[in-house]
Amino acid sequence: MANEKPIEFEQSLAQLEQLVQKLESGDLALEDSLQAFESGVALVRQCQQSLQTAEQRVQKLMVENGKPVLSAFEDRE
Image (cartoon, rainbow, N blue to C red):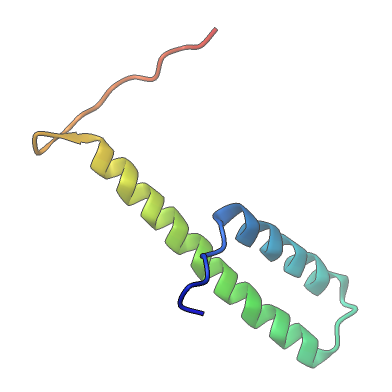
């Protein structure tokens, strides 16, 4: 498992959406619902970690010579 590639954010989000749909359908047995909920919690944590990592990378890229660099987005019309 140590060599397994982490699941990408988009894949985790898609899996989470599928789990939510299954849970909302009400067709799962109690044990299946609990397992789906546990899987969902793990996926939410993965998504949060991915977002935090992305935010840190953006913040790192936005610093130049130890000072924040702010720049306006250009209109692309």
